[in-house]
Amino acid sequence: MRTSIYHGWVPLPERQLIAKIRKMSGKKSLIGDDCAVLAPPAGHELLVTTDLCLEGVHFRRDWHPADSVGHRCLARGLSDIAAMAGEPLACFLSLGLPKDIPQKWVDGFLAGFTKLAKRFRVSLAGGDTGESRSGIVADVMVVGAAPKGKSVRRSGAKAGDFIYVTGVLGGSAATLERLRAGKMAVRQPAGRRRYDPHFYPEPRIGVARKLRALKIPSSMIDLSDGLSTDLSHICEESGIGAEIEVAQIPVATGATLRQALHGGEDYELLFTASERKRVPLSVAGVAVRHIGRLTRDGSQMMWLRTPDGERMLMPVGGWEHFKA
Image (cartoon, rainbow, N blue to C red; front, top):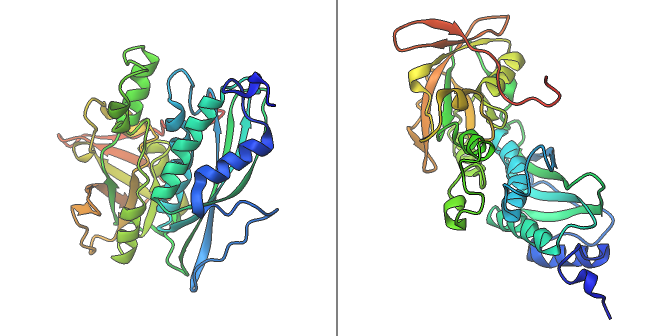
């Protein structure tokens, strides 16, 4: 007979926890052998991305509901696949848990993770579990595929290309700032949280699929660390500079321009395209905004142009680990 210590107060023993993960992940789970066997569709190449999610860095249990944490952990990897214009195939989850964490929290995390996986038809193909002595650790790998030679890189941009973003920016950062300031009820109704991009970001897989089909992007990246930081990656990899029109930046309701430029965790797509390309105002139901142009600048300088014509240097102010 199981003792009461496992009735919801601490995680299930490892084998029982793995069995529960397999059950929750449904028919698409490939867990069962020592390794997963994956094969990309004919004429495709594999895309592989990994993300490490740490309690106290990427989420806080007193701020983020368990299912939101699970959703966010997988959304990061799915967004990386979207940034390469790929299709997700499978994911891997390695979970480090403190021995005193309630099983209810673990169930909520898995519910958020597997719900998003099922929505994008992503198989849970494996992972690991272990006891963590320094908070919750979730290591997520996502494997995707793109037609050979058709994945979109950061290095394909050219001087003169236009710069575009999807959706609106700064909403996640605005929510995080309200949480830090104690101006937001942590236990607000679940329905209200569901529409907040901070708690439940939406990977732009469908948008990326359509952009690839239309042969529009010359380069692309997802906005995980902030517009200024992620645009700088494209500039560095492509060896060009950039000029952004301040008035064209789509700032989310309730957010500031600073948050839109440097906030991060919006998981929208930032892409570039030749000025000769016809880019729709909406792709797969998501708004697309032209916000600037790439410049011929070997030092990769980025500038902001205000509505009155003033030109100022745009600092790189997004998130970076180990930065003072």
